[in-house]
Image 1: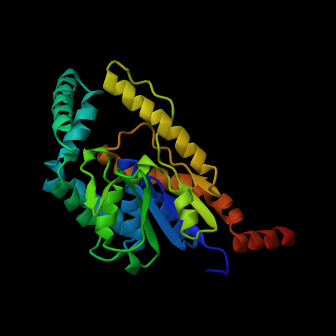
Image 2: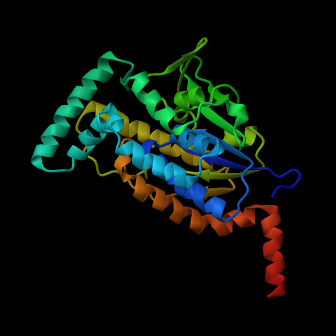
Image 3: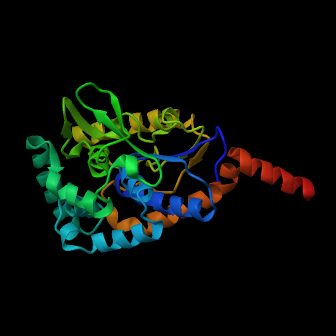
Length: 304
């Protein structure tokens, strides 16, 4: 279902594990037969968007997530260690002690390495979800957004290996080592654009449906160290920059992701459900934003 001059773009934002909410959103858009002409993803939005654009259904993605979370690869990974460390901050005394020690261990790694996760470990996760193909060969046109740490420029991948592009877009600063490509040092696209609305427009979308999975601005976390204060300041800056870019979207879908940390992968099921719920609420607004659906709606109203 397409029409001349009106292309619908889906801008999928970053947020680590909160990106699982994108699966629920995509499922609803598919069920409601909302046509998507191009997908642009940042970070986890690139992972989910890339998987869907290459032909993986939401149902298959959900099965693959369950398989991955139960795998030995994930259970013994640094990602699982990070999740345990953050869970320990809210658990029993024993869990808090374990979380404290794990946090100190992770902090030491950050001080002496470009990323907590090894490139090989993170690559294995990307390869698990993303097929080995070129971006230009995806079933739905697809783009990933990254940041060049050398020039400070936003880099949009429209061709080349899909896995490589998703890997670069998902390289969370401090957690995942930046990717070298020629003279560039590529890191998370969310550094510049957490929800790539403007990039989606630049890539030819006339109507942009944006999915924002960032955490809310309020936080009741204790700010007791310089690191915690710096992290909180960065979160606030990111929140307002994202909010500014979202003003350029035609429809914004905001799943209720709470204050989950980017490493909370064990909440996948709940996040997918929240994505579905938010997308269902946004369906009327999406239909009104699309000329063809708006005309059909007007005809029905007149008949009534």
